[in-house]
Length: 299
Image (tube, rainbow, N blue to C red; front, side, top):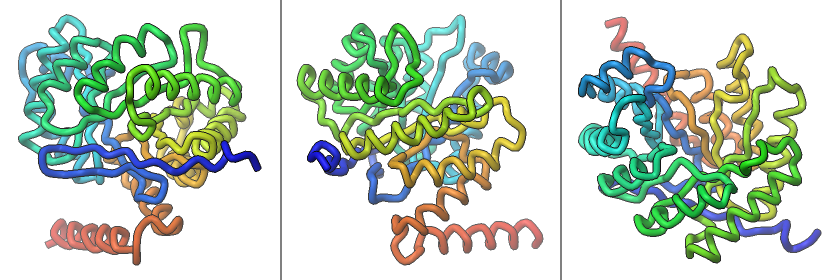
């Protein structure tokens, strides 16, 4: 086998002011809680327009209690100053939780405001292989010593072929490392998980993309976990099957709603079975915590 298929497995380090999370192929799977996001939530959007950030506190608590290792924060609300709102939200979340933060915005000014407000080493969500997007975001990633999620699609399309996704992944890594001096370890690739309801072969394509990215580049990967089950019934069951399968192919993190115990427990079980949970410590601790909660609820 060619040497290019034996890339060293890299680790991506994220930090809050007091806590460090390491995303890596030999580590426990990293759960990125996605709920702090007003998309599709009309009441939450109205509250944020009115300056009411109280729902953020509930969302942070729910994601952390569900098992989130990192908190994704998106404040994309129409008719607001997203930069100001994102900076406020990040400042607030840092008082509520010591989890590292993933700063999620398509607005460059908002990304910079969020990075400036954050006390730690953030994950930026996200760039594509489009030259303009990389030129806008990668200097901020370098300036603030952050890591970045990158999607291997360009202005033309979301590629359906594995080879095109690998070509664009290679482009992103080469541009980030050679032109901006960003370490390959700080590039987290999203291999483009697509809805199984649209094409029954889509997940096989994504899995093969994951294996190729892991073996050829050694970088970490993430995806929107709910994308695969979109439009299908029984979504938690699909998610609980997909993520452990993806973990064996090289996926090391996922952006997901950690309020879904079925999926979180499937991931934790996969960590145990893959040897990423030494002596089953995390699995046993989670089981005991669940028993304690159930006992408290019935007391």
